[in-house]
Image (spheres, rainbow, N blue to C red):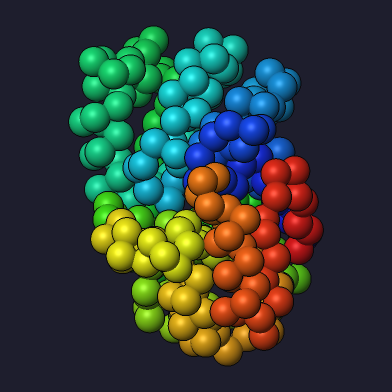
Length: 256
């Protein structure tokens, strides 16, 4: 079974046609729900049955609110939001709380809602008709995860937002059919202190992390901040040259 990922957004900000993190798996699964989801047609939005969230930060969840509000009345079944229990609690307490946005697990009724949650934990795997989505450890300022997508033929790893993370590489190095690695680098080296505080990566830290990778794979960089994206990518290419890192782009498609 071949899987396909289309990048809807991969920036650490907005403006100049930039979109925040979201990817469409095949036609029915979102991996994160940043602003890029808003570029999908209504027909495309209606096909989305599952949303897998790495964590609760707005740049990764903001379009979930509008997605459910838009297509909920047009669907016969709820959209399933897959996330950790801590992320579930944050969304319920701080977003879908009737003060910021309606609680769509109660609309139009508890027995027939527009949205439902299914929680997972690091180390678990969700099987969507043979498409395997394994939950990887991440190290961020809020509870967070990454994902390992496995078609059987090949795999793609998306780290989500993370910083130095030995536990991640222990899992990634087990993946014999790894083809693609999408990893974040949010800040240039001159802002390393901010990267450390906010639990992101800068190019020098990225190079140290990639040195732990024992699999041959194609490396793509995501979550560049618009204010210093060009500089950051130049530094990534310098510090991690031997991994031939490439910048992730909106509209990019990966088949595996």
